[in-house]
Length: 308
Image (cartoon, rainbow, N blue to C red; front, top):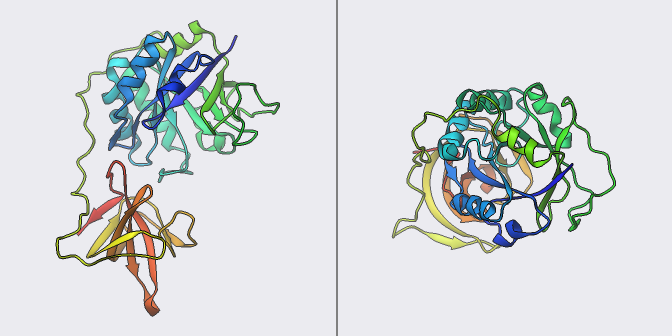
């Protein structure tokens, strides 16, 4: 027996949830300790109204894993026991990527709070990073035949489960929508969501950590548009990173890398720009050159450090 699912986030169309091929819907709930999906309740309720099995996932930000687990559970505690819980372990915006102990600490805290072992979503090539969770958690592995595989037909390919005894789920597309197959029937899904010993977490409702006031231009600030069409605002200050951040020769994630700054690095900057997914800082360097780094998420304003 198998079930097909979709997973959604704040930018997903309701039509993905309504897709008749999907037996289940997995909803992004939180990220880090500063973001809550504003459409989580709506997406959860819509899936339930359509009779679909449900799940909730937390996207790892790479901060304190215990704090992230508490933030996740605090925000979805009324749904514990009603849907499967999942840790989304990816490299993007995850400062702990490569840390083989982070996921273990996260899932242990979720289990302590709820009695539920979450599944772990991870790309096949990174299964080694979460191998020490294999004795407790199931694996939901991402591996695509291509990014244009817009079909519910499974591609003919092998997928490793790494240290896990078997695959619980396989995400086989990531283009027009994320399609997955879970090797579960409805009763098995419910058992993962609500195993014996599940408990209601005794945690206060959480709110995103307050962020420093977003950088905004002063009325008299000098500003300009660069050759890429991005507007910059002159502002002189100091930024201290709270995680690893790439320093680049341009204000694009595709720009050449100068190096990777560790947590605690201090950067003097002279301008900022909000474009794409981030707020960028410009670092003056020798010989009239500049380095560029991200300082916060442009959508949630979650900072990646502190400002002076």
